[in-house]
Length: 359
Image (cartoon, rainbow, N blue to C red):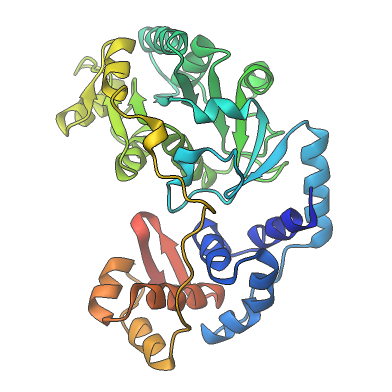
């Protein structure tokens, strides 16, 4: 890996710098090295101190481990970064992948559902995966028990597994052979560094990658409050298709799908239904930024701008759009102020593009 990539990875692995912050820093300063140099200044403007940089030796170990595992890093502005995923504002700045990255550039469909799925739902997911793969569609799922496992098995080798752990960590343990098969014959993707355990807070991040890779997400069986419905919501927020398989109203595992259909999701009973829904969407028409980053803001924020924006913030999350509307400050300047506050440890980002002062 080039020194430039190692520097980018060091910035990304620094505590407190997530995908949105990283993207804004690169957009504003042009390189990770320049952004690192500016961290103390930005944090000071935000009323705090810059977070300590990720250890260079730890980054070197990560790079060596990824290489030893037969995997590689792909950065947001690399030519083979998945174009649909790059459309997300929260797209991972770097992915760790094993396998055929070309699968992510084809038409992809996410298939998700309950871990404790019924035998009938698992059989249907396996059949769907097989039928979609036969039509040249790549099936994306999360390598969990139940529906995910069935979808991967049916679609093999035309399948992408996205995991919430390091690329060398298997969860659940019984899917060790399946995860290795996905990596060897399909594509395995991780956002977290090698060795990272499957912590609960990583699963929503994993779900956004599944939704971001796919033109549409299909929920086969899911309870009303489940990670599968989170993936469906993320797909809808990204402007992608949401589909669901109907189920018996007597089965609580089908209630989530039935609610999705009631709220406007496309009812699916076969692979043909999925293909019919997605064929009009040509993935080649998706906008792919030349660099993967937005244009930098025109100028630094003034003290008056900082005061005006900060005064509108509190412990209750508010959308950035609302801050722009009420502050009458240019959007790029508002983003600059938020970036400074976040690097100073005074701001927290929440789902749905909302922000709040740290408590």
